[in-house]
Image 1 (cartoon, rainbow, N blue to C red):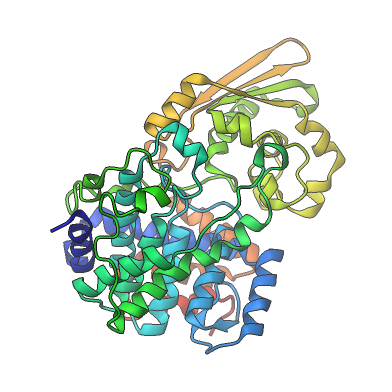
Image 2: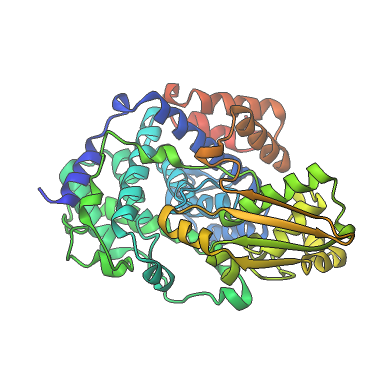
Length: 461
């Protein structure tokens, strides 16, 4: 049996009853965090545009759009909710992969609602989707040189969608293997690289992100109809390593620790609505400001030292739109330094504020070779922040693991607070938010995913 076939057999046959309790708990937290991010991301212009576009396309009203009374066909709902949950860049992540939860959970909610899955089914599908993605990414593991050239180091997420959709539709092991092969052939391509060093993150990077849900669902639907696919699609020499941009692909990592080590337990959460690479700097800045009662007008200069990509891709000043701000160290550090409420970080009046724009130029970004080496070896994003005052004083703090990472984990109250904040931002009543939290806490007890999705629309009956 090939490495791909071994992985496929594991994810297709994995049962909820075999999942350790801590895995179930962590999965429920990732699902809840994704829903919270969706509620927070609903009232953004790009999501409004995308919903309008999907309405024009039309389709059966069979799945919930988070935070909205609109119902769409399940594939459209998965796409919209994927974009929505990633809009604020507040969603959880696995440092080596990125934002896989806000792909898998929208697919699981839409398909679970459409095809009558239970809460247990939802958890089981998402967990096995995580485990597949992480192992595929481990197998890819490009060198630092290949990493910066590649478009496709996150390509593994497509196969996580295949797992989620396939498990919710009850595919056999053979059908799941076909679905993997079909996904590998029909998956979406990136054909351009944004000029981030000069222009920052382009606005189109996120609104197009819903398309990552499509190939896996298509592959599953075709396999369900009996269509064959390449069941060895991920094996060494089949070509996936070329597409994924790997120069040291190792297929044996596809099956390392299956059923014994649950890599999804290292999924971390975010305290700040900004790229994870910036969050150590935000923790350090916030702590220095609080400890030393720093006033921004008294600051001469802020030096942020971190891994190479902060220096090359995150030095954008005076961003013009939300996504550009989320990937700008000068911008988000200014937000933390001035105490702007997180809910207002990307408001138009905040982005255009002349004083805040001027403060950004106090922030300088430098590469720390030690952190660059750690990034490529351990996939950490530690940062040192030094604040130099006009009176000559100087304060420094290093943060290796930001709040929410497994080494600096969220408390249960942190999760509750984040859900409450995002729900209230949308106008959801506290009583409904409390009911939603209880449903998430007892997700495995729900007989139908619809019992959860009905709570995702404010003032729903």
